[in-house]
Length: 390
Image 1: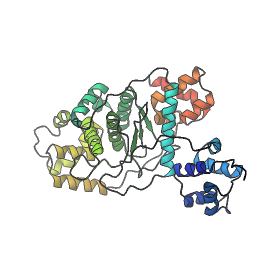
Image 2 (image 1 turned 90 degrees about the vertical axis):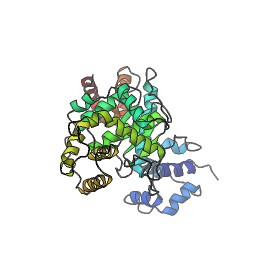
Image 3 (image 1 turned 180 degrees about the vertical axis):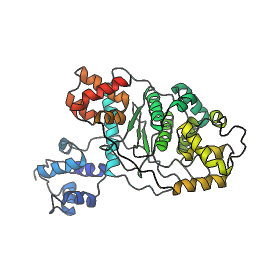
Image 4 (image 1 turned 60 degrees about the vertical axis):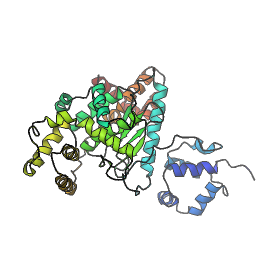
C-alpha cells in the first residue's frame, strides 16, 4: 500500500483540538458536501481510507489549521489549555466550543509572537503563595501597580478604570487581551482565562461580559498570575471556604475583592461612616453609590458589606436574588472602528511590539496585520491610536 499523503492521526488531532464532534463537523460540511458520511470521516482518521487534497483543504479551513500540519509525520506539540476552574462547587462544566478553543490558540500565538518580537526581556510580576493573606497581597499589588482610591474615583467610567488597571498590569510584563466580534467565545463557557506556563504571562477577558464583571475578572486573573496557577474561570461567587471549592479560586476571589474594594477606603466612604448596619431602605442607593465609586458590580459591594458586618446574611441573599431577577441590560452596538478594536483586543504592549517590528522591517505588513487580527490598510490608524496612548 502506498504511504498516506496526509497523516491520519493529524486529522483526528486537528478535529478534536478544534472542538468538533463528528456530528457537528458533518452539520457544517453537509451544505456543500452532502454525500459525506461519519463513516468516511472515521475511515480517514483511522487510516483505512485516503482523503483527497480537496477534502483536507476543506477540513483545514474549518479547523483553522494550515494544510501543512496534515503532512507532518505526527501532530505537533502544543501547550495544553489552562486548567478548568469553572463552575465552582459543581461538576457540571461542559465541554469547550470550537470558538473558545480557537481563542485559546490565538492567545498562545500572541504569546509566541510577543516573545519573538521582544527587543528586551520584559519585566516579570512578583510571585505569591496560596498560604499568603489575599488582602495583604492585594494591598501590596495596589501599591506596586499604582492603583489607588483617587484613581478609582477619578475614572469616569468602568471601562476607564479597566484600562487603567490593564496598563498597570501590562507594565509588569503581563499581556492583557480582550475578545472581540471576530475573536469571540461564549460568555457561558468562560468569563476570563490566565496563562502562566510560559512567558509572557497572559490574561484573556471575555468582552461579552458586563463592565463590572470585567473589572473583577482582571484582578482575579492577575492573582492567578501572581500564584503562577493558570485557570479558565467563570464563577466568581465564592469568596470563602464555606463549601467545597477550588482553594485557588477562593484566593483569587478574595484577592480581587480586596484589590478593588480595600477595607479602609470602603469603610470610610460617606455611605458607611458611622453606620453599623445599613438600613434596608437605604441599602439599594448605598450599593449603587459604592459600586460607582469603586467601579465594581453591585454583587462585589454586597459581598464586602456582608464581610464587614454591615448587612446580614439574609439581607445579602435577598439583595443578590433581586439583582439576579433583573433583566440584563440591552447591549447596544456602536460604530466599529477597526484600529480601536485592534488595540483594545491586543493591548498596547503587544500592539506596540508588532508595529515596531513592522516599521523596522523585521516582519512584513501582512504579518503585522495577521498578528493583530486586522487588515493591513488599518495599520497606520493603529499606529496613530498608539501615539495617543503615549
